[in-house]
Image 1: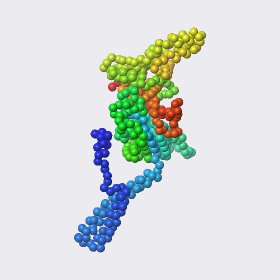
Image 2 (image 1 turned 180 degrees about the horizontal axis):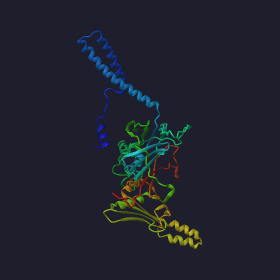
Image 3 (image 1 turned 60 degrees about the horizontal axis):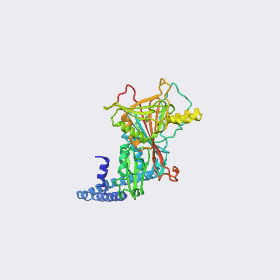
Image 4 (image 1 turned 90 degrees about the vertical axis):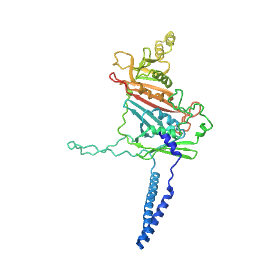
Amino acid sequence: MSLNQVWEAASASPYSPLIAKDSQFFVGFSLLLAAFILTGLFGLNRSFTSIALFGVPASLAFGFGAVYMICAVGVYSEQTTMADVEPIFTAVSSNAHHLYTLLQCIGFAPKASVQLTPDGIRFSVEETRTVQGLAFLDKALFTSYTFNPPPPPPPTAAPTDEHNHDDTDSPTTDPTPYYPCFEISLTALLETLKILGINDSSTTSGGGSGSSRAGSVQPGPSHSAFTTPALLLDRSCTLRYDTEGSPLSITLTETGIKTTCELITYEPEGGEVEIPLQRDAIIMKIIMRSAWLHNAITELAATNPTTLRISASATQEPFFALSGAGGSFSESSVEFSVENQTSAATASAANDGHDEGAARAKRARLAPTVTETFLVSPPSSSSGDSRIRQDYRFKAIQKASRAMAVANKVSIRGDRQGVLSLQFMIESDVHAGNNSGARLSARGGLAPVVSFVDFRFVPLLDDDEVL
């Protein structure tokens, strides 16, 4: 039984205690007072009859009164403590469907590492140390965002060497700010957002259609008077993290009704291992519409390949190509070529007598038509070969297909080590963003909030076996 089915089954029979929390202190005090009186009466007349009349009722009254008093004092102490201490993190969103869309892009792993920062929330997932997904929820996606950094934990004492003891005791200060980090069940978080009604049935989940975009509403037969966006105006989603080690609280407020779900947080098992991308050794950078890449991967997936080869060249056709191989079918490839206007542009510039302008025009046209930026610079150790070729596991690349479907643009980068980075730009029409982060568009309205989801992949070596 899934978590959603358990939630729906429990909603039919909600639990309510026999004694309300507000009345537990009065009931406990009354029972303890009755136990004290009955004990005094039993002490005045010690007989077998008084045991049944005073002793047994006094014992029961004392037992139940002590339990209710402990519960009442514990609840009061917890409420007082939580009220006195400010939470580490609190964020409110009036349209949390965008949060669900961004987190769903990296939903290929069961657990996620969460880091709270003053600028937003960073979610990181990885699988077998070869695939990593990063999603950053900018604070502009929320109507209010409050972050109170906790004090850093005490440093671990390093072992001292008796032979090399330094008498000068100079305290070291770490200038790096401390941001709390914890692990959470990403599957439970996505399921909770669906349970709370944030994933509206009128919007697509983003995994199957390339035309779906974040924040877009596709009309369909499920639309009715009860699924219009007007009913979602009086709705807010609050994320709260009180202290380190406390659960992550998600509260949905809708027309005066509050629904709260608390997700258990876990301590990170170890330092986060991030797949390194050498930004100073980028040999390939291609920016294009994400829909083109999504369509190409979808076409190649029809042949069920095991390996995806990326080929790029700045001087030879095909300038950019994706090939799938290793499957049960024949090899297939998708090539992105230039238009047949290169010679015309070059001839026009040459007739004006500007050789330098002609070369510049030719270089401008020697790029796939669908790309906005096309930079390929093979390393000097490539033995004069101007083409870059690198292989990756096809199933690993497919884990980014959901982000390909909802993103507007994608930046394809590769470094000398072969690490591939797919950075997706997702625009969200958040009209209820905070005032400090709101920007006016050219038409006078609020500009969409731009979010980024980054995937990194480790390449396949010659001796690697693709499972």
